[in-house]
Length: 365
Image (cartoon, rainbow, N blue to C red; front, side, top):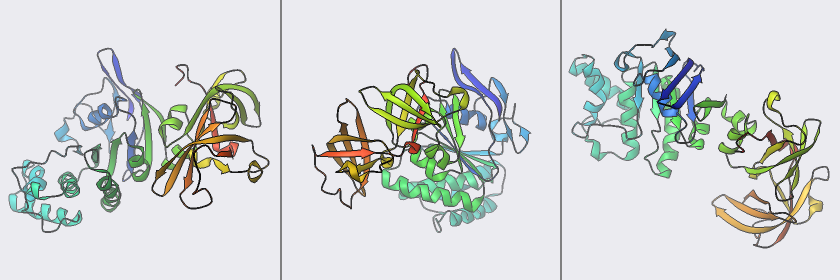
């Protein structure tokens, strides 16, 4: 994809995007509602023509190629299965539309249902299937046509939480088994991180960062990525000193912290300028006595505001002593903090290398 853009009237939905997706990979486009990801997917599918740029699949330009002539298939959030047809006819539908003989189409449908772990489902009705089984039928219907590229538009959005977690594993296994290139759009960061070889984080029609899930999480390139991918403590303030790749930031509310300088060199924070610092809750170190914390790292005092139970972990909200700041700390349920109580005095700190400092965007977000 080279320089692809699309406007709707005065609204610029997609800004001249250029990127490549490796053959046989799982590529996700992650972003909030309204960022342009569905528009981008529909341009790849051919439902919308770009105003500028070109889309190539397998080295062939798709300019002017209608959707039904592209080596692409699509799975939607609401699946669009035909309730009046049985499972076999749903899966075989595209083959029949291409002129494949009915007996051959049914044979291929049955074989595909075997591959997606739905043997013996050929003559079942759609309403007899669970949500996860319907999801697999929709994927089978798409893959039986042997597309070069499979586009998935928030396909797990309508499922309940437990089924979504199960289907994430299934989707990853299916993609690996078939070797088909998947392009997947979602606003759910967990889906993108778990499923993908690479992820593009999209914001206001642009890609903020295209990288591996690990790089997005541990080395975000922009404040938006740092704030959008994973949980983070966010601090706004001003840079008061820069030393050896670290910034000292005087934050709103009186907290002073140290963090590594992050982001591109051309947009690095400078002394006196507004900055945003981010520290992940799991990077926080908690102690009942400050002497228990590493002596070579800054530490702070605070009081427990709340302890939120979340299964295997707890989220502890602290009010920082002497400031208006609040921080969130992630802790395992077991261990010496299992009896932590509201209003208890504690100390906390973090390794500055695990905190990221960016120059604040012009809009302050």
